[in-house]
Image (cartoon, rainbow, N blue to C red; front, side, top):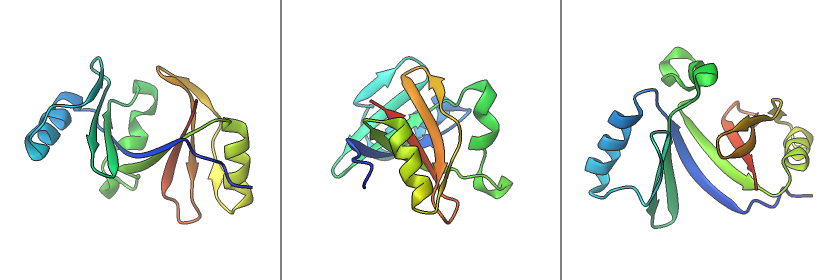
Length: 123
């Protein structure tokens, strides 16, 4: 049974949100297509939505540079049922953390068998 994602996109967490957004504005030569205050911006590119977000203070350590032993790039999957998706990740050999409330809804962090982080967002 597959999780049935509704959308998939890459997301980069940065404590220096404004600097990160400015970098991608310059790199891509365009302003973000989506914006949620000073916490989220997204660029709709051909074949990819690239999100940049400011991690919450409680979770910022998990978004530090990969040289610090953490995952820097995340695959975000919007799913209709968070609990079912987490169970499916675990069934397939990955792992999932407990869900939590984020500004845009419920989500959880999951990991594929190689330890790459997936952010599963409900809705």
